[in-house]
Amino acid sequence: MACICDICNKGLLAGNNVSHSNRHTKRSWKPNIQKVKANVDGQIRTLNVCTRCMRSGKIARAN
Image (cartoon, rainbow, N blue to C red; front, side, top):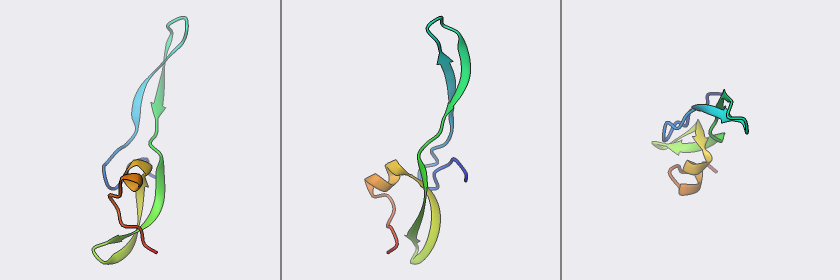
């Protein structure tokens, strides 16, 4: 599954793990993406949506 929200385009973030001895290693943060059936222009479609968009009501869930 793609790590990109279809609503807000939130995606993968990259940065560093920093240890106690200040060593830096690469790491990534993935958004919490869920597959959701939603009403889009009167049709039911399956979207990849982050939970922040679901919680804030940016999509209309299909029954």
